[in-house]
Length: 146
Image (cartoon, rainbow, N blue to C red; front, side):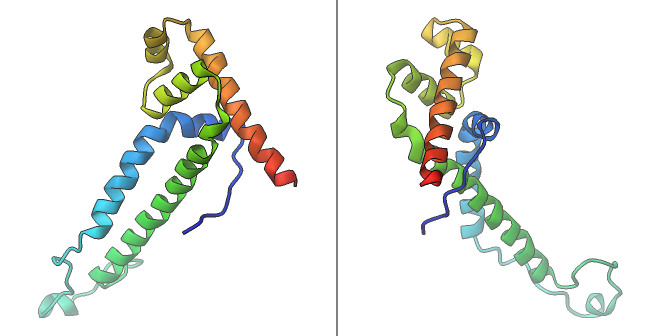
């Protein structure tokens, strides 16, 4: 299923790169939950079925669970759009240092950890990250102008 190409600002893209690692984990967790059918969700029987329900709540446990799962599915789709956006832009990064910084970011490493790993200053890593963000956002803006 092809999702529509969304354009993200540089600030949004920076956040996506920082959060990419946990977004992958969250998509997997949601997939596991949504694929697991819970048979414990049943309507109430007997006297409990006739008791008044709190205002504003759906009376049916199944309906509540469907709503909850639908919200999870929507969150999963939002996360997948962000993940795919980054994955589609990875090939734009051709500089070796930028590739390493990008890989480390996507693996969930902090700027400090990347700095230590590469033996470069934190400021240098931040400049490399900004170059990555700039390249990814410029290319998406160019493709929307045509």
